[in-house]
Image (cartoon, rainbow, N blue to C red; front, side, top):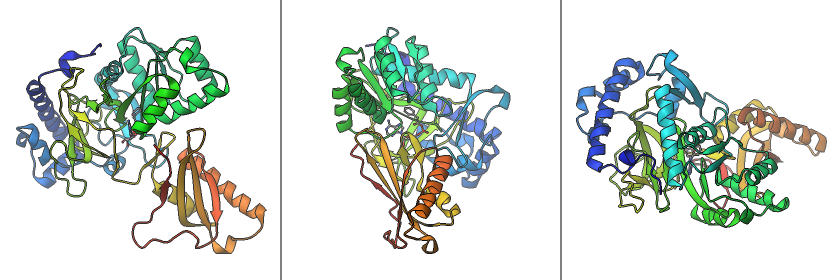
Length: 434
Ligand code: DLL
């Protein structure tokens, strides 16, 4: 098996720590001296760059949150001159203030490097044909994997997501050997393949690298069986770099974190205390080598745990368990990150509705997320007249599509029919069996 960068990935752990500490110190000093946001935050807790003398000292630094990234949008956290930025991406939720990731030339090299490592972990070599069906554009999935595939020297098919029949024909005609897309999209492909009479056993796929949304071992089995390939998990987030933060190797026992670039910690989400290896909690990352928009102790809200083992693949990097959930109410629908508050904002603007709603998510026969939004009609607009109700439904549907970029089925319900809660309202019913 090819290891893309055996020096970095199979390094002696103590040597790696020395390099991590060097990079952390450099980063902390740089952001303290150049970014007022960080200077203020460090001063507030009384920490100076010189206080960082070991990796454990990272716990002295304050966390960074998604809200803070939004507040400083667009360029408040830029650590270099704007002229040095060669590419930007934003988070996949389509509206509201986005979260920005800005890359310098060196950041782009690093990003290609880490995604090339992930492709290698799934058995990729320069002989492979990578069909990349992640979305291209502001979303990091498409381009991030694309750069890694180039770096590795694979023949890269930038198929992007959608246009599924063409996707399958490309796969057949170009003999794609590696498929990259969201796990739910891969199952949808299997469905369409059956309809148009394409048998995956006659295709050339050997591996699929799936991520950007939660999935389970059961789903892995189903994908492997239906697409006749080995399925690998890949994780990442816009704020840190995009795909390439971590991925599974052929051992399929945890995701190797590219920790020479992204230093992980697990914290107790309620107290912020750093938890020992093996304990479950919220994943926090510090981007110790990023130039454009480096982040100190970013709270991902993703739940997992970290451990070291002697992996048969030879890599010594720390592993993270596949994600177990989130500490907030973010949903990922068809690969788009959505918060219930965004739906609430839309409903607040529509006078015919009450802000009482419930979101029911399921996966239909097509394996794609189907979302039903149940909304209470404002009493004075409630009527038996189908035409008026239809008009309200269409209005909500159009506003949701415009604001969030995804379609939802709208079901209008009678005033006061959605259960009221005395505590935290349970807005989301997720019936997906992942
Ligand atoms: O989803 C980056 C990505 C693209 C990762 C392609 C893998 C493949 P965002 O849109 O910023 O970035 O969403 C990040 O998605 O915090 C997780 O909650 C979730 N997520 C990403 N990968 C996985 C995964 C991209 N493998 C958010 N399993 C993260 C479960 C995942 N959830």
